[in-house]
Amino acid sequence: MLGSLCLIHVLEPPRMTRKSALAALLLLPSFTYAATVLSAPPELNNKSYVLMDYETGQLLAAKNENEKLAPASMTKMMTSYIIEQKLLSGDLTEDEKVRMNESAWCRGSSTESCMYVPLNGTATALEMLRGIIIQSGNDASKAMAEHIAGNEGTFAHMMNEEAKRIGMTNTSFINSTGMPAEGHYSTAKDMATLAQHIIHDSSKYYPIYSEKEFTFNGIKQGNRNALLYTDPSVDGLKTGHTDEAGYCLTTSAKRGPLRLISVIFGAPSMNERASQTREILAWGYANFETVKVQPANQVLAKAKVWYGKDNDVQIGLAENFNVTMQKGQANAIKTQLVVQPKLTAPLKKGQVIGKFVASIDGKVISEKPLVALQDVEEAGFFAKMMDHIKQFFSNLF
Image (cartoon, rainbow, N blue to C red):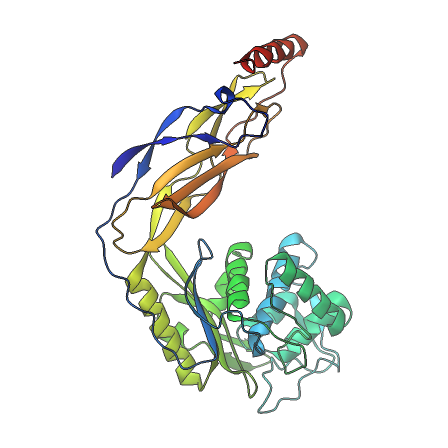
């Protein structure tokens, strides 16, 4: 590992003096790799696809990633995400009984996936969640929508609000199931974004997405994600199929520190969506790797603090900083601290006070918030007066 000198840059407002913008030099690590040639991504027979790096959200390969298409049962990822967040917040409990009303009840047919909760019967919220994720139950999806929002239309509005919040910019949900409906669409990029949030925000419940079967009411059904049975690195997420949508699949796999998310829209068959997913994942793992740049909670530097009981604050990262990059890149990752100017007390531990930036050849490839690693309390009256005087004279030069 090579070391390089990196300057802590300060975000400087127009009226700051040149002197006040100077920062300390800091010894930070950089990484160097031997150059390799990136192979072209495979050509896949589908309507749209993406391969996303989970850590950064970077698209490593894509085709028609923003094309609005019917997502079929991949819609249920948003339904399950809302349920998971309700469980985590305490708005729902795992053992809470949910009734199967006639409006949600599934009689069963060749065109509909069902959990088979009896009419006017009940299942717990956690059982319903498993019925949605593993069995792709339309009945469970609608029952939970009605239980949470009163009716499916209001729940769809909640889905759209949540989609906006997490950055799904080309998605519109009309129902909780993904059954064909005018104005119901999403994109490969948006579905990858949703998968990213499920994995991160719903980590307690994410292992359900890798469960291969679920039995309810004496009926055992297998998970329709074929890769769960053939690739031990795959641990989710959701299949989908209608005549309009074709065969769809959102998948995540983790090999070592590198987690990838793939989304396939409109493959011609069930086997094709699985084989195409294997192909794009294989390409991703052959060409990219995740580099551990900087661990969390390590002191990277100290920054000057005005009007505080302490004169400076230790700064670092709240989360590990990993970067996904092409394997064997010749150029080093350069790391840089960018600290807000004139930090003033009080400061709270974990407060964002800048950013930690990684770049290659002058191009920023990723960044993380830089935070205070300790509290800094506000100083007393006389100490603050002394800092006012110091600032006055420092601005003269």
